[in-house]
Amino acid sequence: MVHSAKYHQVLHASISLDLVVFHRVASDSHLTWHVGGMGLPVSASFKYLGLVFHESGSMTFALARLLQNGNGAKSRLAAKYKELDCDKSFPMMRRLFDAVVKPTVSYGCEIWGTFSSTGLSQELKKMTDLQLAFFRQICKLRRSVAAPIVFAELAEVPWLRTWWSQVLGFMQRLAKMPEGGLHLDILSDNIHDALQNPSVGNWASGVQKQFASLGMVSPFSDGKLGTVDAYGFQQAMLAREKSIWIGLHISPRTAPSARAKLCTYLRWFARPDRCSVEPYYDLPMSITKLRSIMHFRMGSHSLPIEQGRFVRPQVPRHLRRCTFCTTHDVGDEKHCISACPRFDGLRQRHAELFSDAQDSMRSLMWHKDQKSVCAIVLAIVLEAQT
Image (cartoon, rainbow, N blue to C red; front, top):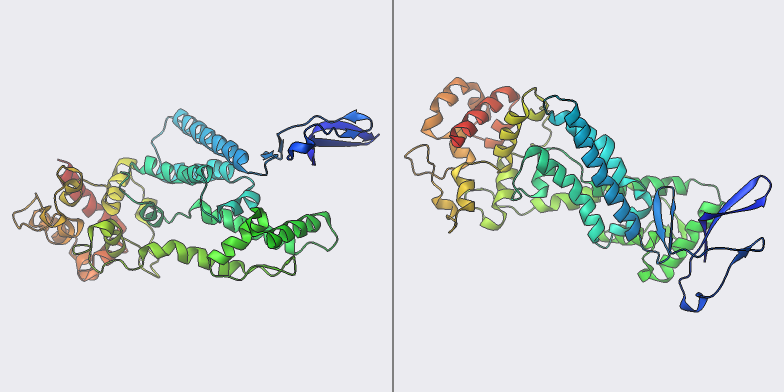
């Protein structure tokens, strides 16, 4: 096969063409291609518009390069930020990460994003892990805090959903192209191959498999790209992400241990529907205080309910007693906030918050007076650390 890039041969006084020869079949190993009487070099791969294309047809090499670039961008960003000689700012570091690292890793995802339809390869898994690792690092979270909790707490869109949004946009642009163009001819061949051989693993095959996995009708009909239901697709993706929260126990205190942390977050800390309160991490405060609040809300703190998880032998959840009082209640977040005698003074100083919340932990955590909520949480966390 002959592919564009790598070798310059002047075909006309004002036209220059780059060519690369791939040999995929053993019987072609001695075949030589010529242009204008000159033999073309054989190459196993070439780089075009920043992506690496390999004769195997695999995107593994391109993804490995993007991962390398993403790690490099993350390291350079951290070094440049350090040179500013200023206090760490969560909002600023988050914006910089989104502006620098995210587009570096996501480059060309309109093409390779469809390869995630059959599960994440090793390279794609490492690319998605880069996003999660950044937030774990900046927030200093334990690994016991599950990814869904991190993304929900920070209202962060997982890169996988972003990549598929880009794929949808690309499909919509392709659908508007005029008939007879080169791009549509290539797309038609790609769709034809996918329809004739579902195991081919090309771009169109990935699109088909993703739509099918979401319970949606294929956007390809009669070998062409039809109407793309972008909204329905995005809603289906979001519903699949949220499925992790379905079926959780009604109370964290009686929930099975296997999903207790997810249950705790959902019932006590997740943003309620139609809640318009600005999140606490947009308030001006030091990164140290902000992390302490994040730890409390995401289950990465030092209260007995968490400390009992890490001792050996592990303390059963119902025996992780509060160490601040003599009530023998479980020392979890709700006990410390709402019932522990040690913090009666706090509750009296912020009586309006507790009155408004009506004994609902979730309502309290998302009270409109986030400044006072943060003051309560910080006082409890500080006590737990001493």
